[in-house]
Image (cartoon, rainbow, N blue to C red):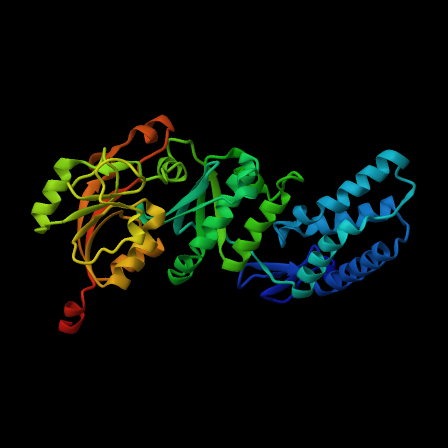
Length: 410
């Protein structure tokens, strides 16, 4: 037995194959000597790039090989080798292996990333923790959405729209960006629930493959990097799987949700709700002449029979308004109710995690779960023509009372 290469005494920290293994915590990191040598090589490479110094193709390949070996500790290593590897391959193809090259300065950000990582030398966790929650995501040309579930119970939903630049991205770019946006939206929830491992479901096979391998084409590299950086910041492990469109039904529907509010509550359900909650609404806001539930209504556009248009710019005082607005307007509706200090009825989806939903909960409003959206709502003509979806999940009726007398009583 070679005693120089063997551990002859019981030890919880072992140096083996260039790694420092912590057997107590099941972690691994680059051994000190190897770390210093790699940092020396990286500092030299950065200096040569900045000064335009010629280096051999083989020298570049050797450094890339050494860094690639560190993938055990740094899962996303490949993403920060692409630029150097591409330039090395191009030089070898044009001039041969036994020649020199000048590395382009575009490689410096990746060199800096490696220096930062090796300086910190944060150990990698070797044990894969079973997922404690599941996040499903989907993206459409208009926006993205996500759901967060624990033991098949929906904990939260999140959604957003793309700006003009993002809307022009490829579908693969949007799908990967949707995962990053979803993780950021659920960051507080994941932290509060002390989640260490998260399952992610996406119906985009490219996104799943690239994240699983932490490799990407040049066009997707930036988005994949952002996913990994977000995961690192959250301090969680992930396991990503491919979902068929059918299994991703809720997230799919959310991303294609009608934002025009072209749907209404079924009249039968409307009457049952008023009877059950003992409500007598006086005006229907955010409706049109073909879907109003009350004789007096304010329209979203000029039409027939409305008493006013643009409800947010009208007074709601001296009324008990029935408010079923387009979902993006819910925060503005709640602000209006606070400002005018009135009592109001709001119809909204049961979407935990949304800012407006949290506010509705904090209002201690009377509420009644009406049922699933497909049973409660009627889609309008334009919604059907554009192949847009009704808000998924259950629909709820909230009675908010912001009148001063109520606040004094409480």
